Length: 516
Image 1 (spheres, helix red, strand yellow):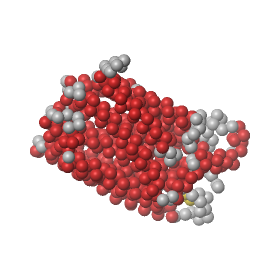
Image 2 (tube, rainbow, N blue to C red):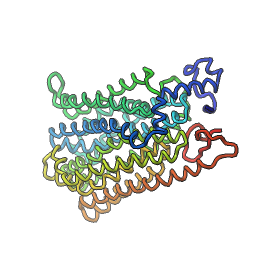
Image 3 (cartoon, rainbow, N blue to C red):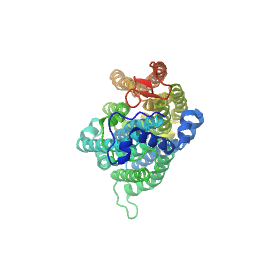
Image 4 (cartoon, one colour):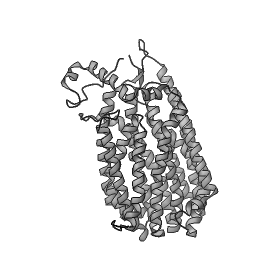
């Protein structure tokens, strides 16, 4: 097995012993061969050669169930907060897109970049590189978490006012947001460590941890909101405090699991290198822009509804759109598996198999999300009445679900293929598709509201954005993989027939070559 290390000595003296440094490549090879078993040779072989559909289902269903449970905690929290009045519900509709943006960026975007980098390193047999990614991922999460925490704590009032909050419906999101964003670093670190584990193909441990946290969070939230027994009555802020405690518990559990040596990608004190940061961020940063687009679409629509209508309509749209935020974690349950499976196959040079994996996951996501959307369109008030019975809220939310719900399947399909693109390290087209959706929904929505003043036409623009998003990503995914397969088939004279390797140190979007 001919393992080519990174150019230069990218590890520190603390990460490998003195004898390893003198043995050089031979020692690195032995370490990597030993680590193939740590990845779980069986798991790696399953990803590279096992049946696609059954493997995807077996690894995804715990994720789906747990992500559904995690998403349900937000819904349960909203249900409890709705007992504080329509203003509190409208306030949560304003703050929720911002909180979800942080969850999506830390878990699905930067987290996807972390999982993708580790999966491709392990798929190519580069254990030392996979280990080094753990520390680099932790640094990225701490820095970004601190930046976003400070930004929202300082500029939160301006942000929520721009999203339509005013009066009581502005004070509620501020009380909630100040608590959550004070502990935001914990969210970023928790999701970063979970992504490190998922990148090895281990979906069970994150599922167990998140499921356990949900069981604690569901009763803790109302205890802190309403002040039951020895717990203080914190009102809206109590929901935020419960969430921060959940982040703390998840962070401690994932840190323990990785530091105990049970994870295939192990924590090492290594010298920080820009090349490793870049490998995470070249996927994660583009994915973060995609997450920003998704949340901007919801946030701008919320602002449009607030400017043309009132708090009850904001609450109706926000409650209806909350269903879209529910299907995101469901697709993430499949997407986390797609990142690892596609990433390992890309790392091993198996492009065609990676494409089959991507479309198998996309089809499953389409079926799940389209079923939810159709059910919501047929029985919208069954969902909306869980949160409020205000007639204006019910009318606004029902209009949204009847028009947009039948097209949720396109969003699920595109979102799943976005995760596959993370695994492959190719996010340009998903980014452009998200931009197209944002333009159609935001500018198109503003245009039709200006012409008609009708909520219905605003929601038609949102539905059209979903259709375009799913269609563009599907078409470009097939084209991208076929074109990359053509590049991979062109070998240099005298090249060996081993696994494909990037000219540099790992997979890139354009420059693949066979390992010599």
